[in-house]
Image 1 (cartoon, rainbow, N blue to C red):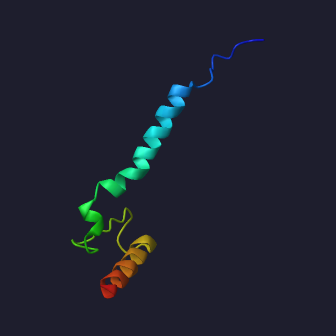
Image 2: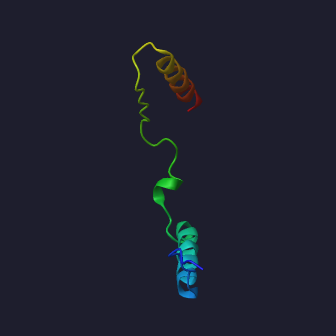
Length: 72
């Protein structure tokens, strides 16, 4: 049989990976992110349209921003 160079992960690497994943999933519960609890939006929201003014994407962005302003 020809070796492909890929080896099976060891038990240690699996446990490290599982620990890192568990820490990543549990971190938001322990680290209370203050900005997540702030009233939305707590500052002006900027919409950037990369196309020319008056184009279809600009008109859609203007309609969306007008709807967002009315909803607050």
